[in-house]
Length: 272
Image 1 (cartoon, rainbow, N blue to C red):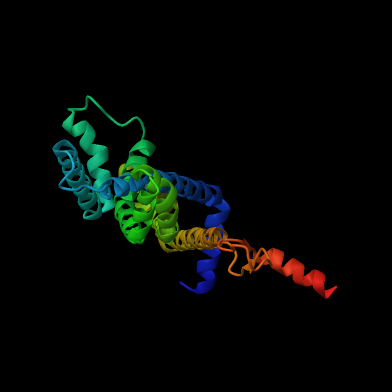
Image 2: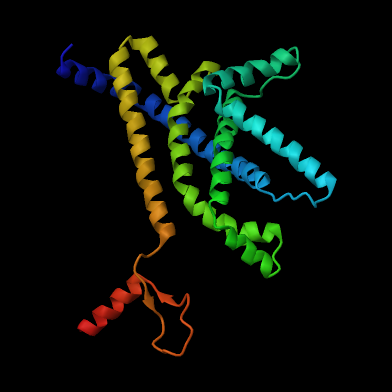
């Protein structure tokens, strides 16, 4: 097969099945976005629960509950990080009717796929969030306690905003992983992008040209996602050039800054 023949086959596939490929891409992107968001919520909850302070002087009920809770979270994280997602999908989708003697079944394949990907993402995010929280200087927590803040107030107003910035790249990384790993959901019959490839190949027997279309499609989705995530990171970082907002040498200037675009506008006015 020549390169020209490959291009010809790809064009033919796209002309005949382009909308089907696009539909598969949409299902992949939508599932990855929703599961990443829900997985992040699960991960944040598990990460915060794992970092609740517990001293020997605390009440025995609190220490017992936290010990049990942390053991459950640890088991959840280890199981879902230590097994392939494809087997998790099989276990969740076929295990529910198996253990209930077909009394309970999934209402839809999408719901089963969503459950697997979201819980899997939550397991990875739990450790990411825990590490992000622990990476914050303990002095931040001590300072918050010194001014009378509770643990919840400290986490919401002091620790989590700082931890979020440090774990943001990992959130983006998990989203890109989900874009690719949703391809294993074909095993339970979910018609995402990779399942589209299998359907087209079954109709045309053009395996390699269709695989090439799939490769280009996945690469396009991941590149666009990477660009948008880096743009988001830069927006959160804000300006990297600051200027004091006051010329009063007697004023307390801590935190009084002027962002780059204002500084540039002032220089431009001076130039005029």
